[in-house]
Structures are given as C-alpha cells and as structure tokens.
Amino acid sequence: MLNVSNLTRSYGSFVAVDEVSFSVKKGEIIGLLGHNGAGKTTIMKMISGYLEADTGEVSLNELSLKSQTKLLQQQLGYLPENLPVYPEMTVAEYLDYAADLKGMKANKKVAEIKRAIQATDLSAKLLAPIETLSRGYKQRVGVAQAILGRPKLLILDEPTNGLDPEQTQHMRALIKEIAKEATVILSTHIMQEVNALCDRVLILKSGRLVLNEKLATLQHSQHITVKTDFKNSDSLSTISGVKHVETLGENTLHIAISKQEFAQNICSDISKTIIESGASLFEIYPQKRDLETVFNQINNNDYNQEGSDKGVENAA
Ligand code: ATP
Image (cartoon, rainbow, N blue to C red; front, side, top):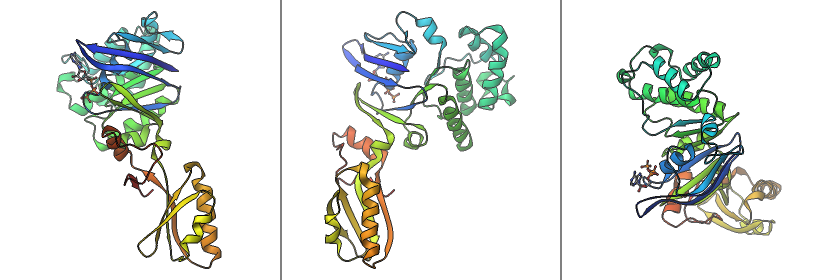
C-alpha cells in the first residue's frame, strides 16, 4: 500500500504540486492524468525519492520515504520520462549496472535480468549499444530496468511512449501482470491506455489533485437509452428510479434515472413494461461517459459529478 499525504513542491515561488494526498492499494493500477505542466512528473519524482518534497509524506508498506529512503527505493521501479541511460553501454551492461544500483545480490541478479529481458522482449538487442537503439527499444530498456527485482511499487511515466501497436499491447499485458503483485502508478496522455489499464484515475490541475475516482464510477452516467416502438413512454416515468423520459426521434427514448447503481434493475423493469405491452424492444443500455470528455470538463470547470445531461455521454 502506498500512502501519499500533503505532498507539496515549489520551484522558487511557483507551486508545482500543492498538498496532494492519495493512497493506492496493492494490485491497483492508478492513472495520473493532467495537462502538460500539471505536476505529474514532479509527483512521480517525489514518490521515487528523486526529488525532495517541501512538505508531505510518502510511505510504502509502512516504510517511510524520509527515514527509510534506501529500503523503500529497493522496492521501487521507476521509468522516468527521460531515462538517464548511458548511450555507449550495451543493453546487457546497462541492465547489469541498473541491478547493481538497486543493490541486487549476485545470486539473484542474473535470473532477474533474464526475466526483465524476456518480459520486454529485448534478447535480440542485448549486445547492442543503447545509442544505436530505436526509440521503442530504448523505451523497453527503460521498462526492463524498472521491473528488475519485482518492485512493490512501479512508477511509469508514459510507458508506451514510442512503442509500436504490438509492443503497446505487450507492454499493457506486462503492466497488468506486474500489478498482480505490486502497486502501479502510470502517467499518460493516452486515454485508451487509461481505459485499458487503470482501476482508478487521479486528475491533476495546476498542481492540485482535483479528482480521485474509480474509472468505472467516472464512466457511469445516469441515463439509459432505449430503442423501441413502444408508444406509451409516459408509463415508464412511474417506474421506480426513473426521473424523466424524453423521446428522441421515432424509436429512441432517453431516460434519466435517479441513481446509477440501480441502472440494471431499472433496465430490467423498463424491459418488462415494454415487452408485456406487446411492443418490440430493439436495444436497451445504460450510457457511459467518455473519459476524454470528463477530463476536458474537469479542466474547464464544467464537470458534474452526478452525471447530468451536458452532452458528456456516449453510448456504451
Ligand atoms: P508534462 O505532461 O508536460 O510532462 P507534468 O504534469 O509532468 O507535465 P511537471 O513536469 O511536473 O508537469 O511540471 C509541473 C510544473 O513545474 C510546470 O509548470 C513546470 O514548468 C514546473 N517545473 C518542473 N520542473 C521545474 C524546474 N526544475 N524548475 C522550475 N520549474 C519547474
């Protein structure tokens, strides 16, 4: 379990990260989102101990970053935005060096390096100097060093940056695999990545944490779409949990409900009413909010947590 409390960091008089607090459980993958300059990298650097916080605390499984820095860092894997690799080193030399930096014991080192190479599919490039690698391969080297030693906390800044589509899939599967035994924080600008990987989303705006929400909850909306030739739509308003029924076009109803948690039951009651009337039910589904739209709304101060009808919804 990672605990971050009241983390603050200024550069001169500019506050880059302002009183940020959150916790992440083992097995969770957290997506750190925010526009350029929102403070994501500064937070990741502080959690990794690479940059000192002005105030605030970080602890991982009861280890304090302040007082047990080395011990905590041994449990941590970090893929920074710009990996400080040595261009003249070969991949094998670099991973050996990275394992030494992590204080890995000799008897464990070889097996761990092999595992990281296999996981990132780097065996063909082991003897290549890093400076000769393509961007995608360099990224894989970065991920390989981050997962050395099976870290309990993995911090990944734009992990699929520069990877081709096949490698992106591979990397996402790898992150999910690692997350079974660890806590993962990843920063990305790619919403599909968040959708594919994350359990929870943290959104930063100007250094402040403005949203900390489960992805599933964030995507919930309080509307149901029904495609039917049922004409007595007023009768659906009497169903428990239905707030409002609107007819959109000839065969589509847009139904506002009072609580998203009851969406399935309400769908079931609506279906029954329509079928029992003898009308046809073509489609019925609770609507989902599109993450990108939610993100933009938060940044434009136009986000409505309750999921109102502001054009934020896309069909599931
Ligand atoms: P990006 O998505 O562009 O990587 P980010 O969310 O990671 O952005 P940070 O790199 O954490 O943002 O930067 C947060 C703010 O702090 C920015 O306004 C940035 O200009 C500023 N900043 C970062 N590092 C320094 C520094 N060394 N000196 C001064 N200002 C800095």
